[in-house]
Amino acid sequence: MKVSLYKLTLTALAAFSLSSGVFADESVDGASNDNSNEEPSEANPDEEGEPSQSTETAEPVESVELDVSSEVGPGVGISPAELEAEAVRAPELDEDQYTWLRPRRHLMGQVPRGQVDYTAYTLEWGELKVGLASLGFGILPRMQVGTSPPLWALGVENANGKFNLLRLGKFDLSLEGDWFNLPMGDDFAVSYLGWGARASIQVSDPMSVHFGGTVAAIDGQGTPDLSDLPSLLISDEAKVEWNASVEDSGATAEIHANAVTVNLAVDWRFNRRDSLILQGGAWLNVDAEVAARVPPVAGLYDAINESREYGISDAYMLSLAYQIAGEHWEFRFGVGMSSESWAWLLQSTEFSYRTGGATRLSEWRTRRTWSRNSGDVN
Image 1: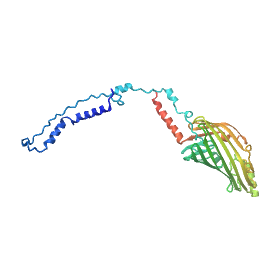
Image 2: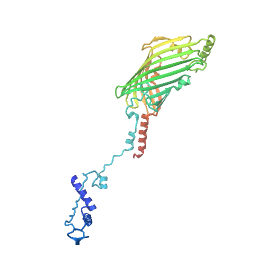
Image 3: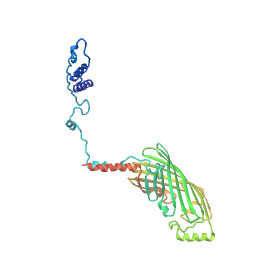
């Protein structure tokens, strides 16, 4: 039966009184001791030292039997055996069910800021990305630096960087730069310096739009010496012929060129692993000044010996690619078209390895927890 709060309070007070003797014999003895310290009254001198007796007798307190059911509070009045009998055992997973719960990237939520090469996003702090022709590292939050090891092998010094300057909700804006330098002897080098900006907007949960532009400057001045250049860039016969002509004439070269490029990309994400990427880019303007002869290195003369505006059909790349971003490995492959044969492969093909960063660290912890708990499955 239910017990009111008032009855519970009275019962608790009664139990406390019986155990402490406040209303029982100890209360009477206390009163006798207090009266024994009083001086004898003048009217009864013979009663000096006699303890005074109370004319009232303390009434015994009737004990109250407490009947508390489980409705008063959880577990009150219920034995452990009864609790165990009423407990509902959680269902156990078999091995097949637990295997189905294994964390997989294609079953996880999207990471809109996961790709960094065609977007305003950067590698996460401490994240490393190693590709076939590139190497990048997140040195600070929203800041990355990188380089191209194969170009170093060809004698081209290079470096690049990106900084995510602004992030407002689903909008990101970054600044980026690229630097290349090709030494040709002690007195000459061709350098490329490009800088630009890129913006990314998450239009909806599965789709984002990215756009940006770059301004580049190409400069070189002095007397080129092609002796140390790799044979992949220029043949040995061309090296000998060029060096001989320079020695005979004492000619020098001076190169100055500027170029403007624009790019646009749209990606549609199916999940954290799979996505479609549509990319396009074009040169809008090239303004170059060339003095004397330019060395015949990898079509350098054709690239800069002009000054004109480009139409979209003159220098463009367009591609559609499928991206697979696994736990560490990433693949991209697709189709495209460009003004220069096979140039679209540069933006539609990727094979890289990524590790580190907050996102992949969180995924690793999730997989580790799943693996540790797998031993408890029957």
